[in-house]
Length: 260
Image (cartoon, rainbow, N blue to C red):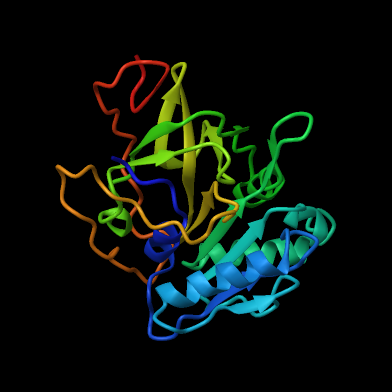
């Protein structure tokens, strides 16, 4: 059987394990649902770094330069609005330069599903990319199997197939830009639980997990396949530009790994 989606192996692959695990973790409770979730996420980041905790911050750091990554969970409000990035172009420029210099900006969740499904990170993505990412947000309403689409070296040891289920705090994006890391096809429309956009030397990663259940184990292939190893870790967020999406044949139907 397939194991369920977990954001932790993604972050391990993205952030890597440099000599100094200099990672910022955004912890403003206007954006993150609770202090408990921050603590859980901090524990997970400390675990993947072999004991080195991230540095928490309630506002965008002024000294981002030199850090490997900046992790922003948005399970309550909008980072873009709380940090007033529309009015503070200097702060937005500093965040852009942080990514362009070779680091990883990791965006977690952002799903807003009250009246109309939306994602609070879309204005931030538009500002950093300089154009509308053309993404549509959706929740996870049914169990789906997702296929790994990226062949980038930093993701080589992530599992080929994972499962997402409802009521686990997961969401998806359907984007006409960026590179899907994991995706499925719903009525011929590709939906992703993880997407990357390269930006000069670095990258912006979105992962559709609210870490509602942060202690879920990682991804595993079906029993017929080999068991997972530890993800190969990298210094930079971008690494090589991922190859074009590989359509996986077979598995036709409404929910599947490739379009019918």
